[in-house]
Length: 480
Image 1: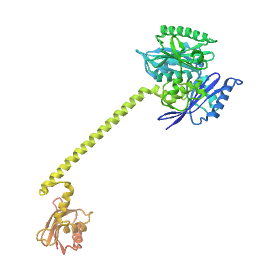
Image 2: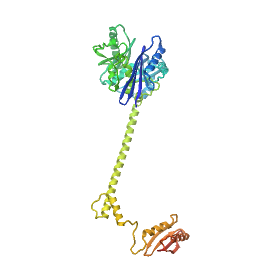
Image 3: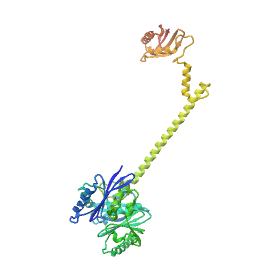
Image 4: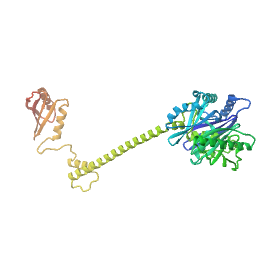
């Protein structure tokens, strides 16, 4: 089953949008667009105007919305806790961050990325004002969009690039802006550090100032937090990316090559034409990373008040889900094993019964040398022996026993309290011996048997009470 994903990267002066149709076999690019925020409209009105144009152009009805917000509205902190339980970390996180934050803790939303180290968890925490998130929710709600995922756009790009590279390849991702650059340091597949640095202007000083600031920052981080940042590559995106990379692969920063993030466009499960001018400019790459984070279920932070994405649910309840899956698997394996053992036992029982049937057939009909289907062959032999008859005759008797039994069963009602203990069949009569409840029942049986065409007469030879006084013993003679 496919679903549509609409990703939005909101910056100070523009909104980049990418819409994917995600299915089991991958994601198909359906639409994309770059929408400048009108210069004559400031703040929320400008963002709303750009979103209205976006909705009219892309028609995202029914799509799941993923929102990338500027890093400037997010506060990043590094800290460590002495336990690994994610739910417990989420409970104590506000108390750990409160001393380091300048605003009341109840006014903030939190999330984090955790990395196990020795006997503790290293946390990279993200906090943002609730009213800032609500501002975006209100603006998007005015055009009937409600984001299921909200995270910094640059973080999404860094996180998705880490999923496409080897965990041993440490790198930096620089999300350039007009006034600030946000640096994301990825070590061993995890975003370990985020710092927002001021931008120097006028060409080369941008690079020199950025290098100097980054070196000081990384030295301080290693000394204070024990996090060593040794990148092998620097990725770059954003409005001022051309100032850092020349586009021919010869640029370096901190002595390592600088690349664009256009490699995201060649993601194997992504299909569609990415050769438009907007794609070539690199303005849509972070929005694409946001969309692929959702379609490929790459875990990451989420400021959405709904907190309903697969990634967030998995990260918080991963241990419980894995344990439940293991228990379900063991239960199913046990049930399957019991079924297999039961089937095998029944097969062995059937084989034993077949063997016994064959032995009985051979002992009954030793003249038959070829046994194919003993049950069917035995039925044929019995039918041949009976010559079509349903009973057998007694030597010298004029009436068959089966006819006598049939007459008795027809004439004596099943409701009668009668027990026949003995039946002696002679040449012209039959004598029945048994007991019943009353003398009247004896008379009733006699009368019913006289009505049978088979018997000429019925005589009560004897009828007397037993010693207990509870039953009447009788003997009937039936002539034919």
